[in-house]
Length: 116
Image (cartoon, rainbow, N blue to C red; front, side):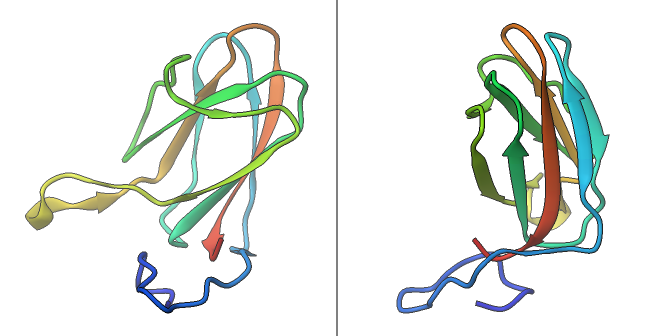
């Protein structure tokens, strides 16, 4: 797998996650909030440092997370392949991550990068 390819082919060996130069911290509560993460990297590593689950959503220039969004459990890490939004002719990688909690607060660290 190369950094220019978001897909693993049969027989490819995944390589360890390599964060990009910049990570982002996001304080999360029961109101959706987000952060622009740029377009570097083909994966996004999200670490939940809190004691409550966070629900995350992705968008091109904005996003709104709900409790039906992807869940990152407390104390857990999740790696997502950077979604691409739009038709094949107008596809754009997401550059925005939003998150919300069902109750309480938590803190997320978000790192764009490569690998899993």
